[in-house]
Amino acid sequence: MDISVILTCVGAYLLGSINTAVLVAKVRGVDIYEEGSGNPGASNAYRTMGKAAAAVVYLGDLAKGFVPALIGLIVLGETLAFAAGFFAVVGHCYPVFHRFKGGKGVATAGGAILATIPIAVAGFLAVYLIIVRTTKISSLGSLVVAVLAVPAALALGVSGWALGWFSLTIVLVLYRHRANITRLLGGRENKMVTP
Image (tube, rainbow, N blue to C red; front, side, top):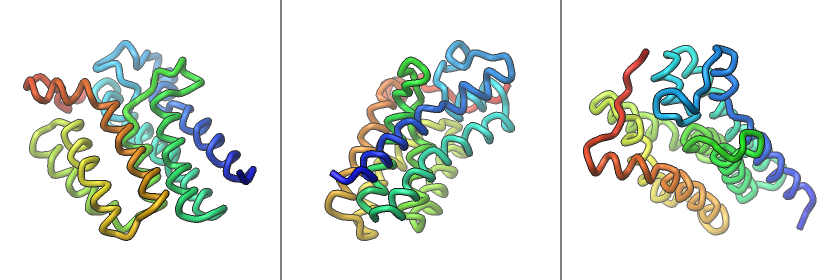
């Protein structure tokens, strides 16, 4: 295996392991694991610290997926780009720097999508925003986009190993939402309410 592949994937994981929500919360004197849903991601940052903090968290998490996927695309092409995106999401979900207690991976996966299939981003964002504005449930928007993501990528010409890596990314995002899915089915899911 080419050393550049290994370095890109390891670097993607390590970058993904830097949890933006934890850092932003720490600056504000908040333990994000103890506030709101306890999830160290943009939605919980929005609930517990407001719009500005959530925007910083979201952009940081987006960059963690975008940068490694873009580097992968430049270094060895589409397959490495999707692999790097996957490892960035793994880092976000299971960060080595935060005792492997991470977020759900949505924004980081979104950053990887922005680098690899940017034409899909506007559609995914529109679907997410419509659902969240209608229901006030962020996880529902994320889950619907995740379900649509692989068929959309396939329709846009993603195939082979690239599609495999992307599918693994989406499976991981869905897996990380398993508690949300249970709450949604039971009508108990958290709504987007600012502090």
